[in-house]
Image (cartoon, rainbow, N blue to C red):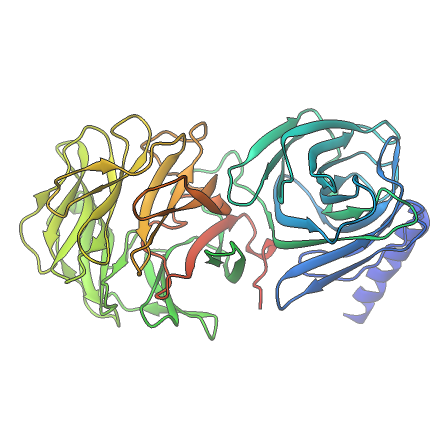
Length: 510
């Protein structure tokens, strides 16, 4: 190990001599090193705080512009496609209105290197900047918004897409094509002062580097790794608490506030939040469980949806939340469970009957199904409110998937959302005040589909539906991210799944 370390340090020393860049091979969170690019007058710095998972950079330099650059860069080497995400901010009033903070991808650490960056300026200007070849002049595409603090930069081949937003709002997108920076590049965060005599600081939190699904991925056969995350709904701050190299899906939060529950490889797992460790939950002979599993409001019973080919697909079962041999509830499939009534007497599920997917109720003890929706199109994701007065669900009956609600007997069906996105899986906070749901981009998915591995939003809305939904998380995920109730008992946090080819790309945050 010592020889490997010496070799690595020697490589960095050689790189510094070759480029004139004072490179530091210092592992900081996700990143492998940092340093000043170009002949800066005031040396910069970089740090990572493992307590709040925040990065801070200080950088000087004349600019990132024309044919060469001067700034502070925190980087890692990457190949292939990737998605970079952060919430970024410049610190203090600053000196020059064009001080900069953002993501950058470079061919090399040379000051004249070809590069692309997604950047916010001190005066709020937000832009996609790029230099096509070494020593060429920098070009710019300005965003339609200013003051973005959410910055995402995605590479797919030689196309780079910048998605930016003011936190809480949806993305505004700009793109540059045919920008060949090479397969292996330097990827990272940067700060520049636009003034050689001044050091400026920038902070970055909720930093995520994801490797998206390859083009040849076959859904429901091939899977990406999974990050189990917890989101503070008031601030939008996120924390990765567990990495899985396989697909895990749909975390439920147990009423004790200490345990999560999720599915993976057909099994159910509990997850101890204090120990940060999963353990399999005994579900007897029922071992083909999917992501439509729901705890009763008191947390004592668990409803499962498990594939049984001979019965037409997914079948609903119930089992004690501590484990045991499940009891079969629905006689035929497909039947996908989504909700318990607060009194534990009824289950609501999505069932395909007569070639139509509708919402049904069934006694939790077993019995006859009751059809609650009849509209043409897919009705899905039913969930009771904590007071039992309504069932919220999603429906594509108007041509776009939207959130609806109805009385428990199926009467008084009314739309809650009517926007441009395909909205899925409304989850009601335990205090009955809020709805969180998943939104797919209309141009990426069909209204009646909720695939894996897409750009999605978690959005929140008052239970009444008043006002416009607010984005509380920008995620690479989709199917399995938040299919079933995921609120913490105190209504302050939500658990969800994000995805990447490599789980190690988003390390567990202590």
